[in-house]
Image (cartoon, helix red, strand yellow):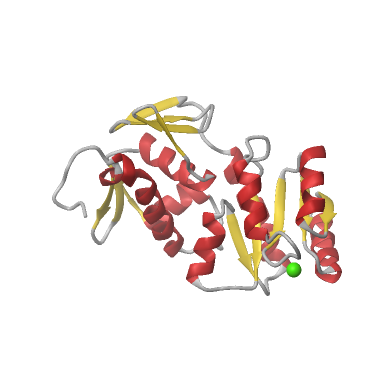
Length: 234
Ligand code: CA
């Protein structure tokens, strides 16, 4: 049983969410705005936050940023609920540090599947490889810290998992489907397109350190993580 914090100002929707979550065997804590949610986070450490984008006062995006910027709450997975469905808003939601988003209207089954997938993802990072280093990128699975030349690179949990997956399976070419399986798990709702979005973001994060070339596109197949230069890389 997990403790899930639902942050939503509309009482009808909040109750519907709480009902669905309780029905799936979890404990649900309700908050009507970011201030209430903040009090909950400092008291009971929830296992997951279901966060509405449109809130009075502090928006869901700003609250997610706050949660992910605080070392005490950074590891709590956040699923953003949004009425906005276009690519730019999805990217904005993910860039705020949210681990996933769900677009209104959605079914209870989809919501519960996403909750399960995000919780699996946050607990299934392979801890057998404590420190992996490739091409100057050092990945520490114990501290979840990525460093290049002693500088810490800030990655979201998904980017971290993607980079970690790449580093322990380097040189191999992965299709988008294989990356979905390895990084996102059996989450039927994640589209292959999502892989491209996260690859782009990972490259952008590695770029200032001159390490974006490690994430290589293999045309017609997928992606490879390698510190060797190849002609097929782009
Ligand atoms: Ca709302």
